Structures are given as structure tokens and as C-alpha cells.
Amino acid sequence: MSKIYFLLLLAGLLSAAPAAAQLYDVRPGDVNYNKKPRAALKVQVDGKATDVREYFQDWMKSSYNVKFKTGGVLGMGKSDVLMARQTPASTISGKLVDLYATIIAPSDSVAEVAIFGGFDDNTFFDLSSTKAEYDALRAVAQNFAGAARLKAYRDMIAEAEKKLKATEKEKDRLEKEQAALKANTAANLARIEELKKKNAENLLQSRTDSASQLKNNKLLDESRLRLQRRRDRLSALDRKN
Image 1 (cartoon, rainbow, N blue to C red):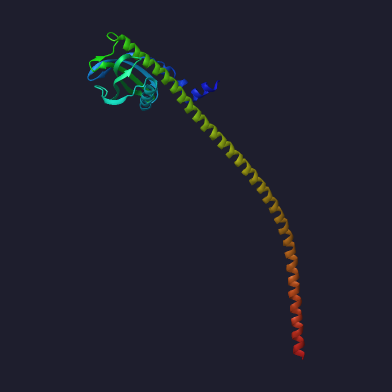
Image 2 (image 1 turned 120 degrees about the horizontal axis):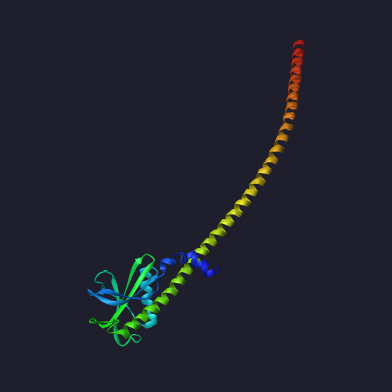
């Protein structure tokens, strides 16, 4: 198993592959803008809509020098539309063009980008009347899809590496904790053996002390008796005198 395969599996990418079969495929569609349907090129990519929106703007700026700004709201979706009005885009046309993009979230982990444009508010690109510009816009969408795919894989691998690092860190922590517990247990067992030995010594000393105490008690009784006899003798002598 390769490292990349393992990381993608850990990130959950491979398990989600069947459901994501249509991701990154550019397809024609339409978007309601100014209360009318506009021909658009759509592509679904991995990622949260907010993150994809930011990446799309950065990518268009770095790849085509097109700077999108937030425009009005769509007629149906009530979502902000990105726009670049009367901007040079030589890959699409020699004239100034209006470019638009919307990013919506079909799910929490997938974003759909729709790109459309025109020469002005009355002339929007479509396959029938402005085929060259429409095809050029399709190429832009396809290029973005490729870049977004690479970014998604890099992000997933980075996330997988982060999880792997955290797992390895937890493994090290558990191993250190187990080693510490083992050492502590060994020390406790050694201490227990030491205490057992000490208790045995104490018991032996206690027995010795008990024997000595009995002997001492006997000597004490004899000494008391001897002392009492001498006192009695002294008292008898005192009475005779």
C-alpha cells in the first residue's frame, strides 16, 4: 500500500469515490440572473462552498488576472454572485467582457461553481450565438476543475497527514504511559517485597523483644520482692532499737 493511498483512505476520499463520480466534470447548464436564464458552465468540486469561493477568486486572479467582486443577488437562489464587469480576458475574447460566477453548496462537502458571461447586460455567451466565447469559457471552467481537483487532493492528504501525526502522537503518549505504569508497578512490587522483608524482620524482633520482656518482668518482680524484704527487715531492726 502506497503512502498516498493510505493517506487518502485515512482522509475518507477513497471510500467516498463512488458518490463523487461526477465531480470535476464540466457540464452545460443555466443560471437565473436578472430574472432570466443564462447559459453557464457548471462543475462540482470537493470542499466547502465558502472555501471554494475564496479559492476560485484567487485562482482567477492568478491564472487570468480577472478580479471578481461580489455583485447583486440571483433571481432564484438569493445567493451572492461574483462579477467582473468590462474586464480584459484575452483567452475568451479580444473585447472587454463581463464575467460572472456563482458558488452554491449541494452538500456540506461539495461546492458547485457556475461560470457565465457576456459582452454586456444584453449579450450573454451561449453555444449558438457566441460559440467561440462559450467554448473559451468552458476551457476556463475545465482548467479550474483541474486546479480544484489538485487542491482538494492536497488538502485531503494534508488533513490525512495531520490525523496520522495526531494518531502517532497518541500512540507515543500511550506507549510512554504504559512504560511509566510498568515502571511504577515494578517499583511498587519491589517496595512490597521490601515491606514484606521488613515485616518479617519486625516479627522476628517482636518475638525476641517479647522473650526479653518476659525475662525483664521476672527480674522486675524479683527485684521488687527483694526490695520489699529488705524494707521489712529494716523495719524490724528499727522496732528492736
